[in-house]
Image 1 (cartoon, helix red, strand yellow):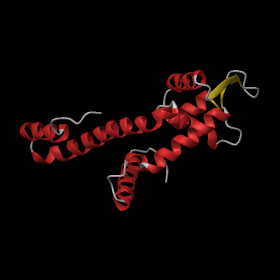
Image 2 (cartoon, rainbow, N blue to C red):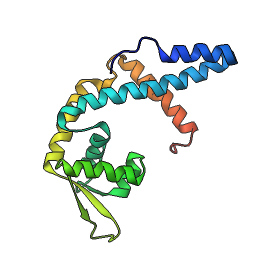
Image 3 (cartoon, helix red, strand yellow):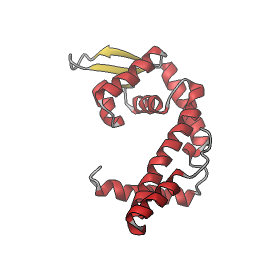
Image 4 (cartoon, helix red, strand yellow):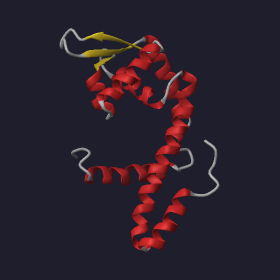
Length: 167
């Protein structure tokens, strides 16, 4: 991703302050910073896993499958755990299957469900991508360890307040 000529968050904040004042611009700038950081991180993460034939969402699916006891999940359950719509989960699994990272098969336990099962090729790609992501600190290497912990804590508070999970 090429660097922008201006800081879009600072520019948005300047415009917001002109129209709404300094106080409302603070939370707007914080939210805009989070959203822009998500875009930057997703681009970095996709670049890190690209050599392994993956996108970051596909990597996440492989990791989830690799964490299960039998290396399989119903596609609907995979979507729930990835926090994406079932259609998106199906698209992710289809792409992984096309590349030989997973196979799809009807569930013997639930005739309506289709299982995504990780292959050995998928496990190898997930392991190799994880090594690269760990080495790059998941794109957060610009932040010191205590800043990374502080960010996690701050965002956890926000997620808890939004009802994202029960503590």
